[in-house]
Image 1 (cartoon, helix red, strand yellow):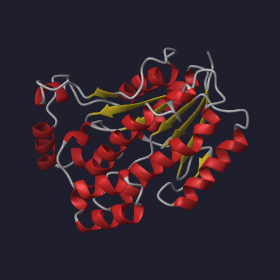
Image 2 (spheres, helix red, strand yellow):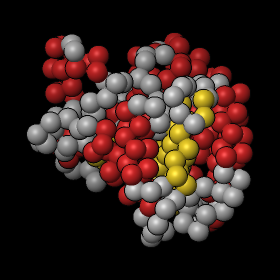
Image 3 (cartoon, one colour):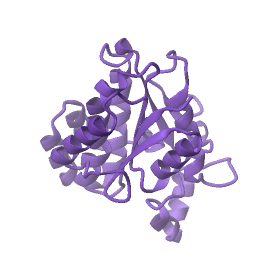
Length: 252
């Protein structure tokens, strides 16, 4: 079954791998990124988010079947909150009307195992309250945990939204995927630093033979974008080489 997919962050990493996998399977992919894709958009600002939604509506006026909110960065600062949380939520909410035109609509947010780590609760609560100004200000005051704060807020938002009348009530299944450490352009500088490699091994231990390639995460994302049963929703599927089970064996 060929489907129309919108993928943000489609120019690199997990987003690019997912876009390529979908195209090979025969899907139509509308890629979104800062450059090198079908739609050029800056999801760190409201104007860029609105322009992206309008562009998708122009390219797919009859609706879309799947959305991956995959655009993200990992810098310690407010831009990470703006893109990873507000850009993702704006993508999902803004494209929801087009999703509802599909017979089997599916949406996926890229969360992270980092969402399980302690961070800045003020940022997370401001995000969930929809106060972008306060969230960015709180992040600026304590920027080091920006990435995990953005992913925690996104996972929490997804869980609530997924079972709401607007999503589940409209027949749209929304889930999250929680990658562990993935070898991608975003993480390449970390693997070039021996001290960071040691820190990664401590914070994200794995039993798999190696840290994942983007294609390994994309395989699970495409499953979530195409799964037929509407009974799978509101879940964060960890694809982490065993990190979560190693660190939190008593939680499930």
